[in-house]
Length: 231
Image 1 (cartoon, rainbow, N blue to C red):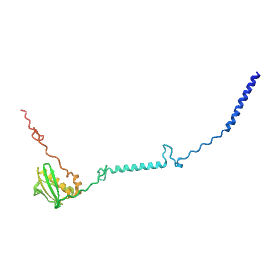
Image 2: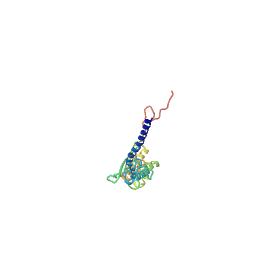
Image 3: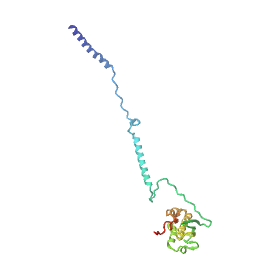
Image 4: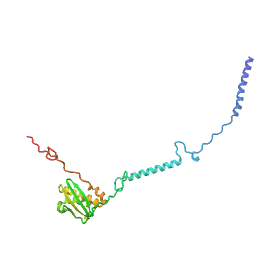
């Protein structure tokens, strides 16, 4: 019994001595230094953290967005000019054509309409028009035909400023009037190249391709059928 008490007392002494021996070891460990304070990226000029743009970059982005917005607005405004004509796409500068005159100072052109062909000479004058050696009022008795001939001068605001001499052949009076107008339009633009845009806008420089449709076999005309007879 005495042996057991002695062993228990020895065990108690050992257990009390171990914490006392460990205490100096813990005291010997130096205290860890405080972690250094985080440096301010903006103060040191370093880039900001990922996902957060720097102040200078923000200003640059704002200016760029404003510039892009103004450019887009400018492009939208430039799509249509003051006259309502679209000017989108590459702009081609119009080239002014040269004046084309013969040795006598006249502008010559050929006009066509249906089966009629007209040769036209144009020069400055008082507005006299001669067709096949006769005055226009004699050759084209119908007022509508004379109106067709003078349409070009009315559009270009040159009425009574040019004399015209024309020889026309083929077709009827309506086709001949159209051929003379076509010739006068081309001759006027050759004498005054600056009027080409005005005359072309009205379609006077384009040769009218409409002609009589040909007759088909088995029919009376181009599309007219013969009278049907049941018996």
